[in-house]
Each structure stands twice: as C-alpha cells, then as structure tokens.
Length: 473
Ligand code: FAD
Ligand code: NAD
Image 1: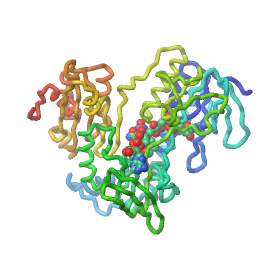
Image 2: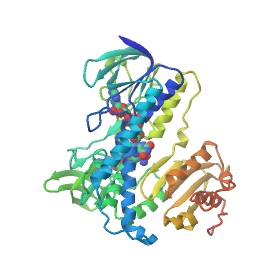
Image 3: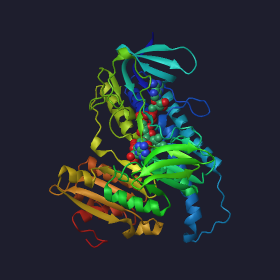
Image 4: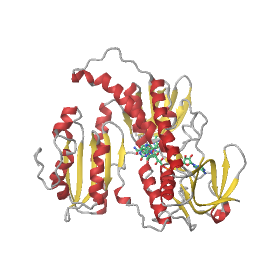
C-alpha cells in the first residue's frame, strides 16, 4: 500500500480542486486524482468547468458578442467598420488558450500548496482506501484518513438523437465547430442550449431550439422568463416548446423529427446540439464492498454537510444534490475541508446565485414569485426597467428589468430576479443583501453611484414600497 494521505480528492473540477487547496491551507497532506484528458491527449486540471464548461463557453460568448456588435451595433455609435471577416478557427484557438492558461494556473496552485496531482482514474474501495489507475501504468492503492468525491457530471444522452461527436454533439462538441453551421438545431432550451445557441446565432447560424416542456425556462421567475423569451426571439432564436423529439436521420442534412401540439413535424439542420441536462458522474467510482450509497438518479447520498453514508467520505459538487453550478461545488469543497479540520463550515443553499450568460443576461437569487405563491408566502414585488436608467441608455443596453420580492410583513428580501445588461455582476449585491438578511428598505436606503446599472436594483428596492423615483408607482 502506498503512503497514507490526510485527504484524497477524486475529481479536480471546481468542487474538488478548491476543496483540495483549502485542505492544504489547513495543513493537511492532499492528493488529487483526476482522469480528464483534453483533445490534444494531455491531462488537465479544472474539470468540466475549466476545460469544456463555464470558461470556454464564456470565451466564445464574449467573442461572438464582439462580432455581433461590429456587425449590428457599432454603426449606431458612429463607428463604421468595413470588410469585417470571421475567423472561426482563431476564435476556437483563443478559447483554447484561455482554458490552457487557467488550467495551467491550477497546476501552479497545486505546486504552491504541495498538493500531489495523480492523473488517472480513482476508485473508492472499502475502509477509505482509493485505487488509482494512471492513464498508462499499473494501479496502486492509497489509504487516506478522509476521501472527498468530486467526480462531477456528464451530459445526458437521448436515444432519439445519438451523438456522433461530429454533426450531433453535446456541449463540448458545440464549442469546437470550425465553421458556422448554416442551420443549427438544439434539443433542450435550458442553460446550455441558450448559451451555445446564442453563440452560433450571433455568428450567423439560423438556430432552432426544441424544448420538451411547455414552460420556457421553468426554473426562472415566470415574468423574467417571458421577458427574456421575447428578447431572444427578437434576436432570431426560434424557440419551440412542448416538443418531443422522436428521431433523427442523417443524410446530406440532419432531419430532426418531433411532435408538438400540432402533430408530427420535422426540421432540417446542419449541426445538432443535444443539451437536455447532465447526470452525476459515478461510472466506476466505487467498488461494491465500499458500500457507497447513491440515490435512484445516481447522485451520491450526502447529509447537509456533504458527508456520505461512510464516515470520513464526503461528496461535493455536481455529483450530489442541489444545483449543478461551479460556485456551489466550490463552497461545498471549502465547507468539507473546514469541517475535516475541525472548524465550523456551512453552505447557505438559500443564497446560491444563478446566471445565464445570454445577452441580455438572466440572473437570480432566492425564491421566484411562482414559488412564493405556491408556498402561500405573503410578499410585495418591486420592478424597475433598465430603460429608465441613464447608464443603460448611454450603453444602448436598455432591455430588461430588475424585480425584488420582499416579505409583505417583515420586508425581508426573499428573491431578486434580473434580465438585462451585466446582471451577472449586479446579482452579487442582491446575494450579499440576502446573505445579510437585508430588507428591501435596507437596499432602498443604500446609496448607489450614478449613473450605473445598479441604480435599477436601487429603484426596484424603492418600488417594493411604491416609491421608485424614475417611474410611476
Ligand atoms: P466537474 O467540473 O465535472 O469535475 C469533475 C472531474 O472529475 C472531471 O475532471 C472528471 O474527469 C473527473 N472524474 C470523474 N470521475 C472520476 C474518477 N472516477 N476518477 C478520476 N477523475 C474523475 N456552472 C456555473 O456555475 N457557471 C457557468 O457559467 C457554467 N457554464 C457551464 C457551461 C457548460 C457548457 C457546462 C457543460 C457546464 C457549465 N456549468 C457552469 C456547470 C459547471 O461546469 C459544473 O457545475 C461544475 O463543473 C461542477 O464541478 P465539479 O467539480 O462538481 O465537477
Ligand atoms: P438544463 O436542465 O438547464 O436544460 C435542459 C433542458 O432540456 C430543459 O429545459 C429540459 O426541459 C429540456 N429537455 C430535457 N429532455 C428533453 C428532450 N428529450 N427533448 C427536448 N428537451 C428536453 O440542462 P443543460 O442546459 O443541459 O445544462 C446542464 C446544467 O449545467 C445546468 O442545469 C446547469 O446546472 C449547468 N450549467 C450552468 C450554466 C450557468 O451557470 N450559466 C451554463 C451551462 C450549464
């Protein structure tokens, strides 16, 4: 048996690598096993998030936004650009460089924190032992006082549209197209479908999203989702809800067959993205005699503090219950590290912000109006449109709104919902306010710089008590 560690982490995504660094900061000896291999065959730290998720998708969203602005918006600012050309392979190379810089940064952080990186597969055995199988070479068994499982998630596949990783792709493949598909189909109008659909729509694809549910973005506050849908459709995204994809046939084009309220339909596309959700990644994760309990959907069972049924074995991030978000996993990683070290540690699951990086961006924290209604919670709502803020007008980014929901009796903020410019940044103020259990009055009495987009948050807080200045209440 190889040398014992205080902690072995399986998975180096944002849940695992952040947890590992925190463990090392607290004085523990740490090894991290990760099996991810990038397209050039090299192992890479950072998991889904850095390699094929959050970061590369945002790099492409940013590049495609620049292109769209040059094409459609700069002339309005009095800037005429002639002869713009698109170089998609360069856009993809830039994205790859952003990824390799950041994943290389984690490697440096591991070195600085004396964390051992073991590239290969990790498998939990009985008695907190972990089998490590390197990409090349023989398996070894390590023992650890504690094990943190952070193996993340992978895309769900559907029988009606089997992936060929060329024309029918998942989210990773959707970030590798070397030219703009003329017609792009997307199955699933969720977070990935909208973000990747937006990238290729801005670059010139005709994008059609086929969504199974009746409700568009059912997780999002309904008023905000309705507003967002209108804005996306204005940009040319075609969103079809209540669709059941039944078959795909590949010829010169891909024929996607589906059923909706009007019966059988089909569309022809050149590329098809399947983005119908993700499932926990537990393939080959634990031996039978390790006795690790998972639920019926494959998530590792954990308590409020991310401890599994096995004492000293924890699980964090996408592989456990809760939203599949990088920052949620990272906070769980920190909590577990601190609890292993004997400190207090907790995650406030009520104040996890969400962002969808479309243009405009959708961001929210806390309860939606629909959830408050269903729970019978008395509330007041204050809304404010970006159109009435000077900064959004000056930026030519006046679409969207901020909505604040506060308890009708205590005025405590229960939820904040936004669609509009840079709401990915604005949501931080709302999250902090909720973390501090602020009232709408607290936000309303906080001075916000002028002219900023944050004035829309201020005015929405004032609107909760019907005293917004720049609108009729
Ligand atoms: P992962 O990041 O999935 O990492 C798990 C790692 O464990 C992987 O490297 C995997 O190879 C490895 N592994 C698995 N099993 C084993 C094993 N047995 N042995 C060794 N290694 C193993 N979230 C956000 O918050 N913001 C965003 O903007 C955002 N954008 C996204 C865009 C896309 C296209 C996708 C797909 C996801 C996005 N997400 C975003 C979600 C985010 O990527 C995940 O929530 C996050 O990566 C989960 O972190 P994790 O550490 O739990 O798992
Ligand atoms: P999602 O759950 O956001 O959306 C999947 C969509 O597909 C849903 O609307 C669902 O109703 C629909 N769907 C399911 N089966 C279908 C079918 N057979 N036909 C048509 N539609 C179907 O999942 P996703 O977009 O795949 O993303 C996975 C997760 O990754 C997200 O839930 C999120 O947690 C994370 N993520 C986060 C971000 C971000 O934070 N900005 C970005 C990308 C991904």
